[in-house]
Length: 303
Image (cartoon, rainbow, N blue to C red; front, side, top):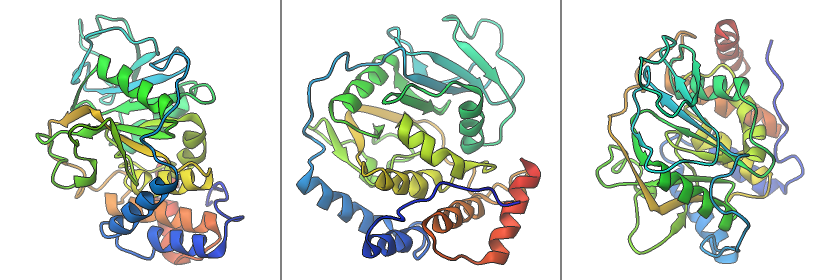
């Protein structure tokens, strides 16, 4: 059975709907970004993301949540200061933490997961969602960043009213060449971006609620960051994604999931196509029914 997903953009003007349809399914997944970059630059002329407002308690709060992916306790987050928000170690091996690897006594989820999308879905299902207006962050085990940087990122997200934020990509990161628009910029606090990358996203509750159903049964998470999150943010009239230049991160490993076939039988790019098809249907546009049913059956059988 094909699950039901939120209806998106049905009340928007038809030219806007057609533009999103083109971005979601009418172009190659690695070629649409220049158009989306131009679109957010146009948005920024009317609503500059660099402008903010003072807020109460701009850093991490008890109503946020940080999920850190670990391999039996191994990760790259440097705890140079405490965080006011709950922190959860997600052991993706399912074998449990090794002794002595949780000196701060953080809550632990230990479930065997195949990739970041699978981990995010399990964390979202098992944890209480953040309070309305608050954020949940998901940090990969090979993302090098400090707790003080995370606190500062959450402060900037609140001051600048971001619905999604991520640390800027350092020049030493393996992401630097592929994701040039996410690369750290000098002498600036943040810059507007069309997407936040799945390795270290901080997502506000309203965006999470709308986007997470599209991830159901998807292991890699491909398509969530490039398609589902931007479209859901546009539906909420809040496509305000910020790459925080004050907070650089380094991804210490190379990509490893692009050619992997997951237990549902799909490759990551096939999972991405499934998410794109789900989004098209949620907007009321047709897709290839045979191919769509095949992929939905694959992920539902595994799920």
